[in-house]
Amino acid sequence: GHITFGDPDFLNGPTHALRVCRALHEEFPALTFDITTRIEHILEHPTVVAELGMLGCRFAVSAVESVSPLVLERLEKGHTKEDVVAALAVLDEAGIAMRPSLLPFTPWTTLADYRELLEFIDAQDLVAHVDPVHLSIRLLVPPGSALLDRAETQRWLGPLDAANYTYTWANPDPRVDALQRQIAGVVEAAARDDEDVYQTFSTVRALTHQAAVLPGPGPARPHGRRPPPPRLSESWFC
Image (cartoon, rainbow, N blue to C red; front, top):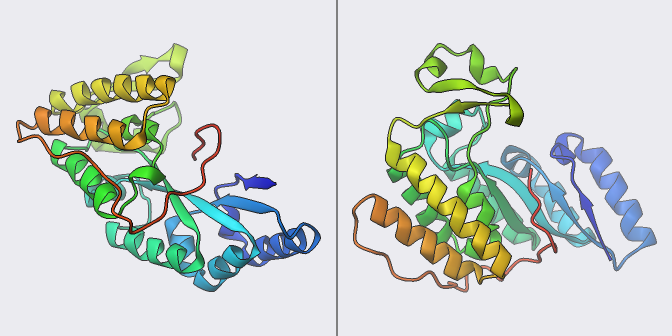
């Protein structure tokens, strides 16, 4: 009943992608599918996205990663926070839900950045669209990473953890690393207990405000702006 096109470059060849999806829909008209694609490709191909919606696409996984200009620049993502909002509009028009994948904890992330990301998710009514594990993801720097060629990397890079095939690193603000460890524990327990995503998000946001010594926020609730998206039985992201 459903197929996942997991290639993150699905819309690198939009003509071929449409050819495949048209043939699939013609033979199996009730079949639905999801795709993984870049924010910039959603914006470059709005008419393709619209047709994909008509052909049965129900959601699109896209590597939003962050809404911090500095983090997006360091990761060379090729999009901005404003681009994400525009891509959401394109997908809304096509009837396709966005399932953002995130990389919120990096050497450049500040507590203010993380709070801004959470507020963006809430304001855009995306709480149900984000698998809670994404709220805890920490940058991996494997041997051969392009980040190793940058002079500024030496300011935060630690020794190689050979067993996990990644270099260790520390955020300049130890509160950020401590918060990441807290949140990782929260989302792991939430996944194990099948906790409601709004409860998990509310806990994460409360911990973030506590780390920044700010008044506790109220609980997160649906805004009704976007319907809850379809979900896979197992979290999947690029």
